Length: 285
Image (cartoon, one colour):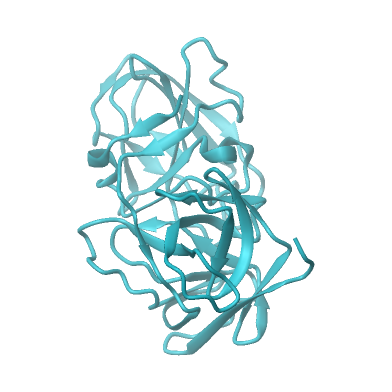
């Protein structure tokens, strides 16, 4: 049975994603990444701190050598928090929203990933230290699916990413939104069927959030994968920005902005540049 993250918890973060990660802990939506404002981490759960533990992270030139694990007994489950240098001690009680420490940019992050809190849940009798084995996570939030035609203008950019102004968030600050799965592909005009979550195609798979019976996953008039329930398997697809290949497209649910985010070492797009994103399948599914 899935553990549901309440609506009032999600509202404390400007972005969340269940699938936008390459690690086993997120398989089938068994963890959620929560993106807070600033450098401090508000707790997404209430309970007693059981343990804090230093974790060795993969070596990356842009990242800290160590990460941290915080275990919190919520009464029904054991919550696992990662990417936070603990500001709490075992035996302390925390409430939702309490400051539990400083966000850590660990070597588990790709260079285009912002700081965030990783949250997963274990049953009390399960091993809390293993990376895999968490319970499925669901969210108590209606995420609005936004149609996108694959175009936009760059409004923000870094060395390894660029965010477009399309699709536009319909109500910044009021509710979560994300890029919609199209019910038709190859230029079809069908309605939207859920919101796509994940790293396309640079992570092994993704997710489909919201009410959807769709088995086909499509963006900007092109099929990009297939869904089994809410779990998505990407097709062998390449993402292009103005005809140049990029590592991929980061897909998530956002409270404040909804523009498509292109990522990769080869992203060389400047603020103000108009971009057309296309998807090409390299083989038939």
